Length: 286
Image 1: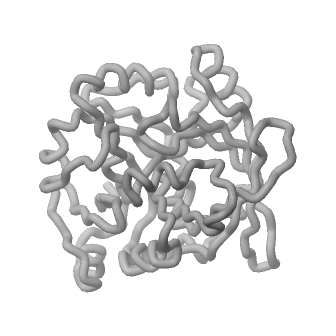
Image 2: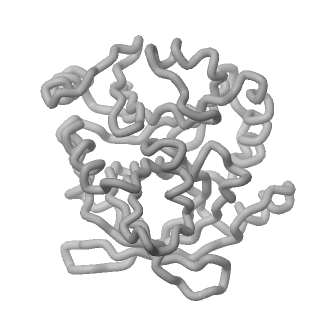
């Protein structure tokens, strides 16, 4: 059985305008949490220091979309936000959830993969009782070894600090981050499939989908991108091409999003929009 539990969150990056990114998602009908700034240690056992980044989140019942911004331009940049945004701002990575970060790190290291080790992270969040700390333990893959962008595994302590009921109600009816689409060069398809078999400890199905308890990762050759997302091209390869959100009812979600001025593009099983460097696919709950 895999030690990876879920698609924990996607990472949408900006170095120019975190509040503007949040407003875009609010216009899409999402509730967005207040800004929260990060602390972490650079190496296991070292003191936690400010990272110069902050996030605002679109929270569902058990996973979320992280809107990540560089808020201290002259500060550090441990997560490589500048480098990610240099290629393009927008959807730049995915983090998978786990129950035991030590076990994940040990398995990947034994498989010959270079990791950050298990890092301690924390950030302040507003709760009904006041400010509290979200604490997590994370394993990150170095950007040199993860050209698709931010890639890692997270073990969250008290999940109730993130998954607060007021932030989980969305005007568009969204209930879950249900999938990520990764597009790669055709000649590298087998390499990435093999790599993610090791990373996730899961076998893909005939559609090249890695299904987890919550959410899935699909890997596709770039030659099929126009079939999957008509009219879209890849600004970089590999390319985190889309995140899929499940809603309770497509019709009101589409009406809301179109009414707020977004170009809605139909798909066989839903629709998608391109907003702030990210394709967002909306599908209806089965």
